[in-house]
Image 1: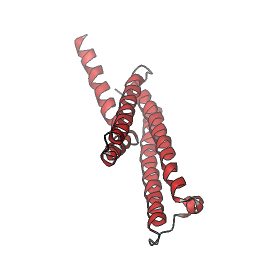
Image 2: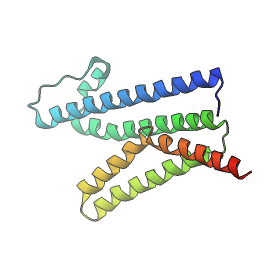
Image 3: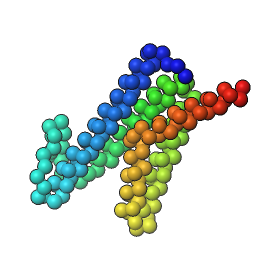
Length: 161
């Protein structure tokens, strides 16, 4: 599929946004985790970066639970970017259903592993697996599978005609 100059520029911008969002996410969570470590053990010398200094006054549990909100926010950002990317690559809203399905399935699996670990008294294992699953949702991984699959499906459809 050939892209117009406008589409090529938009794809480039999407790639830059994916990369920037990944760096922002990583820097945010690494900083907050270090702050949590400092608050929990009280003997760890760490200062939050200035752009996160607002959280310096937050107590441990408030900051801990705020990470869940941040996780949801980053999942939503990546979901919206994924929809935009699929639309740009395909020129249609029809294939967006695969993004919805992929995100939905991984979210449901995340919920099951989280509560399954809790119910089976293996919270640490369930939580770790859930973190890995939600990590997929906070990355371009799903798009890296869906776009080539859609391209292959498109090529297959054209060859059968």
